[in-house]
Image 1 (cartoon, helix red, strand yellow):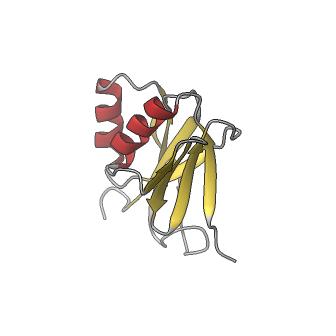
Image 2: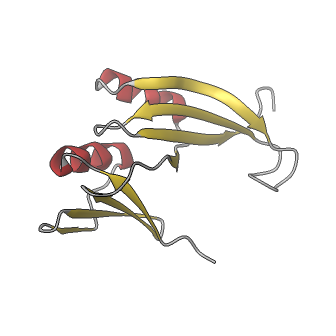
Length: 125
């Protein structure tokens, strides 16, 4: 089974589109207005911004985690939780073996929580 699409609530579609364009470093793949739908392509999985969608918790890969969080904070984005180690992967069951999984949590322009995730080599390796 393959994940095809994730929908995220966008109270203000223009504001949300600008936020996610900046966060993802890309413009939307498609827009349909009316009815008010914006799609981004995340490596073959569609991210749908929609006025009527419920809030979802997105986990987005962001290898340059500390730098991205610093940039977002400078842009005025609310940082819920800065980068922190959440897990070490002894094997490849849930992530790349031998890496540390770091996460930070931010609030998007619509009040939704977004997690940014990085897999890094442990310090000293």
